[in-house]
Length: 361
Image 1 (cartoon, rainbow, N blue to C red):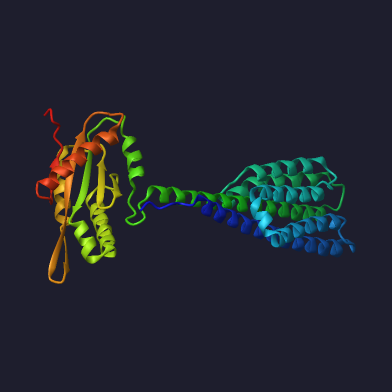
Image 2 (cartoon, rainbow, N blue to C red):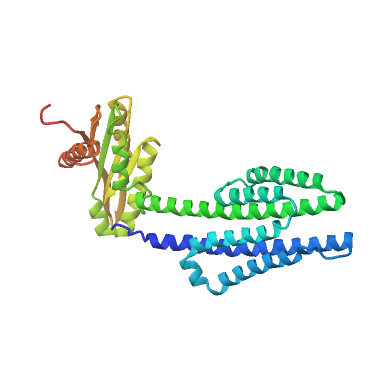
């Protein structure tokens, strides 16, 4: 039975992760900004006896973050519906809030530096946090040096304030970049899962027919000796009828493992459906390589089951064919030939393999 994959289910999972990540992002930025505001005012009061002149703009930024977080908390269904738009809107508002604060600097150089950092944070996703920080940090350090050199006095205190301000900008950039990186990773992971589910037989973990066909077709223009093996189990229907489908599934899993043990990791092994399997061996040295594998596999696939003193012997009928030249419809050609040889081996008494021989040979 073909497994139906609901892509919307995975899309919803990604959106839910996005939503959760946004809430954590806003909460983390709120906490860091609050602590920074508190620390800045403590230092200002310690050095000058007054509160910091930028406290109001900091509180505005803090309020924006809290409002955004509350919107996510209260209107979760609406946010989920427009999650991607709101994600970028959040980042824009956060960066705009910092810009309000940072624009109060007396020197244009700081504003230009901040604009560059804002753009780099918005368009880049760097998985390694250390690498990202090592790119942004030198720019902020240069900004500190340039501004402090231009000060007339109070260099020690101003240096401390600028270092703290640029550290908070760096921290915000790292958190935002980390958020996008994790989100991209999650999306990639889910997309990979979907691809694997589309290409994989859920019972055995082998490739399914569609994936196998695509794999074989990749060699349609590749010269070399290619081999296809079609395998059909003997007495499998009897096993299913007597011992049930669960035992039949166990048998298919066992057969899959034995096939994988026999062939190369580079060979394409797939379950075409039911008890029919296909092995594609690309660019082998000679025909004997594949023939030896078939002989070895026939021995491994003689599996006995007992039920009420009745013995059920599972074996395999195998068809094998080769192709030495490139062929546009490689899969169809090889499958037709190997399948024909497999049916001949069934008529020949089962538990054997036959090579396809064309009628003109």
